[in-house]
Length: 359
Image (cartoon, rainbow, N blue to C red):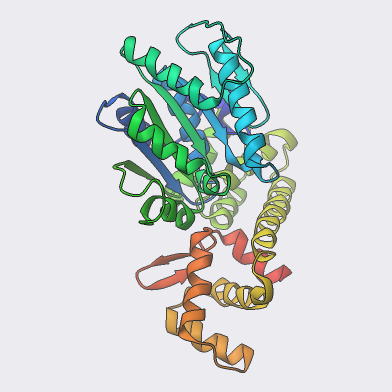
């Protein structure tokens, strides 16, 4: 396991996946259960959902197609459909593995079909896959990472059709913007509303698990790290395995934990800052108010009334209760804050730090 434990990309094999045995078994159970049509994996950013998804797909031994929606920000629905059709054509033409920038797929049961028509669509190809899977008493997995983005391309409508009609094709959806993903699944007006699903929540690591993850990795790479730097990483990265993984990788590569810590901190802050700015650019005239809400919560968790009162004080004007709720709900939808036991808080300490220092 050690050689790949700190690999700075999503894990592909079970041996390199830390602390996901229970979640992995749940996903595999769902994939193998004929009564389960859809699996949903949810959790904060950088808590290991993408690794869990990829390992589960590989461990299941089923043929699959994996669509990473993070790569489709700048693409039209028409271009998306064209690329999906291209990948499906290739695996049905006998290709064992197809990996494009945004979509990857594993060959379908070794089947090789003569697909001569250039006008055939991804819908027809998936129907053909469903027919073959039914005859062979198996299933095909259609997996979507960061699935909260599917509504923008109208793909949620087609996934509802797959769920209802193509019973040999299983759906696996993974997402970090939990509020948006829930809206796709729980909104009565959304195409996927009302479909039964197996939900799996991916949590942050505990302090003990964070320490074990780092120490296990350092032992595997035969690297000795002073206790003070392990403790500092555990305290700073607060159970976010993505940041712990990056710190471990830098330590192994640079052999200097103090430099590794600083580089991890700088890269993490740049990334969360970019993600937040992207969100804020869509807020229009409310940009400054969202920043204020985040600054309030970056200092410490707050109840709804505390947020409202502090907003009034900082803006020197009253804001309606509806607007305060809207700001908080939108930040929850996009995964920047959480609500627990009546308190709103920022779960990623590096996001809180970035907000206080840069905004």
